[in-house]
Length: 263
Length: 288
Ligand SMILES: Nc1ncnc2c1ncn2[C@@H]1O[C@H](COP(=O)(O)OP(=O)(O)O)[C@@H](O)[C@H]1O
Ligand SMILES: [Mg+2]
Image (cartoon, rainbow over all chains, first blue to last red; front, side, top):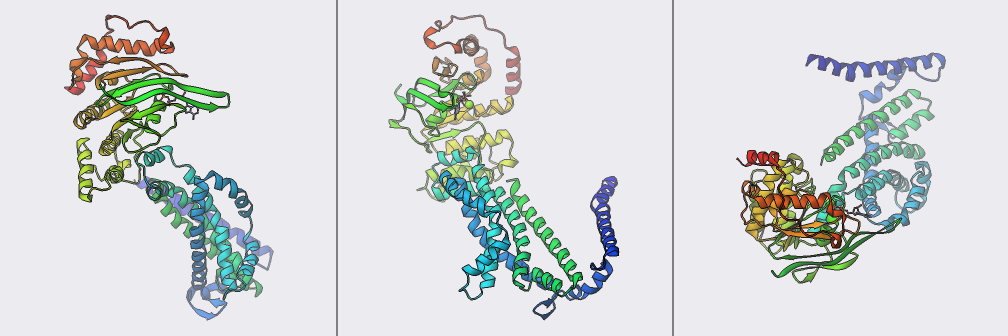
């Protein structure tokens, strides 16, 4: 028992701490060669204010770090939701119909690798006449980029439904909607949630790019602003926060995903 | 006996890269109402193919299947199917799995009546205490009990079973054979079952249909099981006819299934049975 405990401490505390230490050493090493990069202590001093007052709002681009993070998460959430709303049914159609796959798979494969930096201007053009073009362009960019893992995983999931389950639906002569809700969707859920998790990861990647392009308040906009002001400590702070938030979101989605895996 | 299920001149041909593969050729079988028929034959000869055509899950190439005067051309709940794997939906409890079909068939019944049907059949197969369990919480045998309950609860015209006990240990298999035959008797169903267990076929059936080897599998021979019902597993095993029959079936599977029926010798006369004491001991232990 205690031996197991010791092993756990080693695996989950000591070794990760060792990794962080190596990372800090490398950081300091680089700092000793170049003056551009602030060392960890200097970085902390410069970003203290944003951490100790995480929800403060002193100006449009001068807010506490969690306030910025909150803004970004809210925008990501909205774009992500749109991605799921369009991506899931699209995935179902792809999985269910060969005809649909043959028609639309090529175009999907071409659009999928397009970078958010390319979608954003198109979004601005598309929503030019809307009250808030930059907001809608951001939403558009996040949804279009984040949609593909959901689309593709859902399609794979639908194609992977065991013939046995479909036979049950056939033997019982279930109606179309019953087949969908009682057989197809539950059988596809594990795949769908894998897609949802990957999509969220991409949505979070995209937000930073989108905010940088437009200089909107948010963690990415803040980062870009800090860079322009020559405040590299804050750039590093933003990178760390973006990483932490991305990691946390992924863990949370893994938990949800795991719930459906056993079903 | 009046024919209830008529399979006539059934052919199943799969197109393959090497040209059309004739799996089943001119398969003829007539089953009377209330009969229990088993289909035996080597693995891969086309037993499942025939069964799934009758179930409507697979299309026939030529021929006809007529059930109770109506031609079968699609799957439907008038034929309760029990698959080799129980095929329960893992996101539903045992109760919900049975209810899914009952709702479909008894859509005019009240919720209370439907509830009673589901409960009744789960009780009969011995799952009274496990109705709210999910398939993952049930053993293989218990899952197959749910599969049997689901098939009977539809109140189908006919039962189709494809090696339903093939994946179970022999103790569970004997138990479930009993459950199946009791329900069959009580509900007076017509049943067509695929198996490759000769003893199972003898214990359950009125007639045993032997299929010749594929490709171009057809009906090799049909034998009537002479034992009165209800059958006692130990009693019938002590009868000399049991061995005669068993020998004949095994000999068919071992040797003669390769021949076309036209070339086959007439039925062999009684022969000294090869003792199968180990099997008898096993059964006596279980039924004791
Ligand atoms: N889709 C298919 N295409 C070609 N051959 C098939 C197909 N499905 C089954 N078969 C062949 O049909 C034969 C009979 O299969 P099956 O009915 O499952 O046999 P059994 O149930 O008697 O073991 C097998 O030899 C199998 O290879
Ligand atoms: Mg088979």
